[in-house]
Amino acid sequence: MLGVYIHIPFCKNICNYCDFCKVYYKTGYVSRYLDSLELEIKTRYNGEDIDTIYIGGGTPSSLSLEELKRLFDIIKIFKLKDNYEFTIECNIESIDEDKLKLFKDNGVNRLSFGVESFSEDILNILGRYHDSEMIFKNIELSKKYFDNINIDLIYGVTNDIEVVKKDIDNFLKLDISHVSCYSLILEENTKLYIDKHKYIDQDIDKIMFDYINDILVKNGYNHYEISNYAKDGMISIHNKNYWLNGYYYGFGLGSVSYIDNYRISNTKNMSKYLNDDYENNREYEDKNTRKENDLILGFRLIDGIDINLFNKKYNDDLLEKDIIKTLINDNKLEIDNGYLKCNYKYIYLLNDILVNIIGSRL
Ligand code: SF4
Image (cartoon, rainbow, N blue to C red):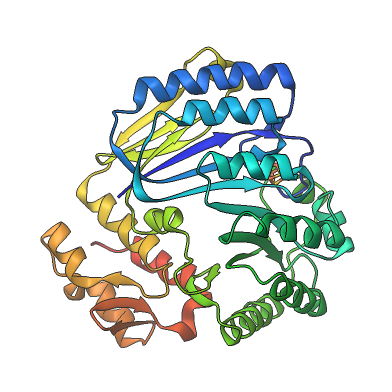
């Protein structure tokens, strides 16, 4: 399968925890950016059939109606397969009925909202400018047009487990198909990091993680990736392709592509990008790196890694690797129905397990 990611780096406000590639929204900038984006797509896209498109950011929904129309005109170049998935990321405060209609008319069939929390205190800490009432109102409006909707939630901003309980409770009230729950990461150069915001206690973080899993699964959401939950048939196909280490194009400022075993990174420098000097780095991934990435990404999926597929792809025997044998012996990994997966008891410790795998010979 082949995915397309398109980066729209503009935001009306900069959130306190954000280390994504973004700049403040400025009208003149947007039209110049779309000129460069169009040229990049026309230059690099080879006319292949596309399974998924994902417009992310930044805040794609911060663009005006006219700017969004221009963006969709550019995107018409892609040859989409019949059962394609087309997602656009939105912020709660920058969505209205006209934009939703425009998305629908241009083939978008999935929305992903950066909600993060329903709590006013947490939203203040994170530097987000919506509130709970706006979330309910705009998700309800979106449901008039879309049945595949995700929200992102962030937990572990404070030690207060009650906040997490209320957030999950409110998510369930929205009655939508998908949720991504991430524990707060304090990235360097973010306001929270500079302000010396502290990580919460590890044990409490684990209690929150378990609580979220428990309640969401009890309410009919499948836990299919370490941070992602979906109703039946509603997983993110675009993101699953990343976890399967599949090929995808990335267009726009700071985007990454993975095509024909080349990992290609675009510049994060806006001036360079606007001068159509978009490629920053291109690296060929050898067989060992590809294997490592298949495992690092694949173990994020709760079902794990298709053993036969891996063995065929690399003419190898995954279960014969010393590190894999050790991790199976330690009960950290297990074989289930032809898949090698992380024992659910240890899923919270996945990163530690992956460190062991990366450090070994594959
Ligand atoms: S979190 Fe999203 S909306 Fe906030 S600054 Fe980052 S990209 Fe923009």
